[in-house]
Length: 503
Image 1 (spheres, rainbow, N blue to C red):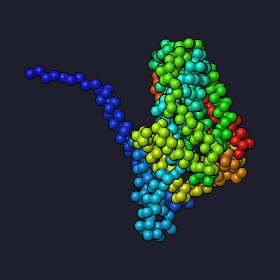
Image 2 (tube, rainbow, N blue to C red):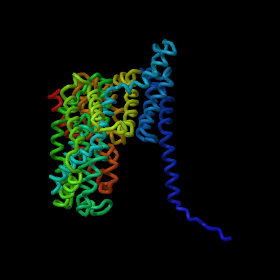
Image 3 (cartoon, rainbow, N blue to C red):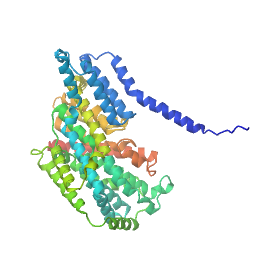
Image 4 (tube, rainbow, N blue to C red):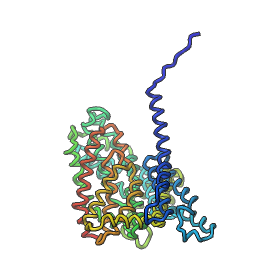
């Protein structure tokens, strides 16, 4: 009987093998880095237990960069590893004199400390607001209204996309959910109306322009509002724990306001110049948006209630922060949404993104706080201050901001970037004589959104737009460099003097 030969695609086999090797590398990298740091001599002036803590912390950051498992799993692993080895990596020799049972209780208390952080609950609450936008379809309605009235020309359509993101940003802490979950599904329907197709020369008709405006818009609004990007809220907690400065929603907004207005008014136009669409005018898009709005019908009861609720939350965040904790205000609004039927309890329990982020940030807050409590941050600040001795406060501010901004090229996560670098930058700055720490903190935290523009992996929505087929690799890197430079220069030339004047 003749044997049958089955052809094997060797390229597929090779790709599968490479994929397994890459996954193995990503899985092992955090443990290898941690082990190498543990084997290194403890730096002079630093307690051994603080260095051991730092080694595990760096392993967590490496894990967040490569993400062999979800970020929440990486953070939880780091917290558990430290808590289990707390007698060597968490407590000072003086603390070790306490009874063992007390140390065990303290290590557990530290491990779960992030879950009691108000910022973590504010992040969770904002995710519920986003769920309300999605369930009631209010977010889609707002975007379609803008497209209907501004969509006749390519340039005004760019502004419609910008302002659609602006309307959603204050209430959506995940720019991935806001841009990838609401804006992108809408604008993905637009290029075909112009005969603009992905992965095709026709992409430049209008699709490329729209996608670039969209990713630019989400980066700008992510810097403009404290509640528009999850790492912003993490940064808030890190600033408080590292240098003791509290930043309110209103102060954040005022600090970035001149830049926000400037960027919102000019970025679609700059994109129109640097990356011009071939099609300048079309009547089909407003008609399509009008038809979609007709399908949605009149404002529903739940949409009206949601509008009232989010406005109430915004008023409390801006004007009543001294009376009601912002996280408590968010929980109050969530309760109202549940009682009025805008959301159901199942919407809360089934929101995987919210719970994933909740666990992720709770563990990161605990881990970042440990750097301070073990004395590592104080040591780093002392060493960094010595390196920058003799440099004026103004020069040091510029140098540290530029370094913080450009180092984002190394990170595929704004969260990992914030956790790894922000405490160190704040500590170094605090040792420099004459440094205006409030201004420095504002510059650092408001840069987190706009720096995401520089790479195709710089922020959550980047891979979505990069993978749309409308933004070729060379174009993305070129435009990322141009717009990234514009944002950085504007921060230094306009934002810095404004913040000095205001704070």
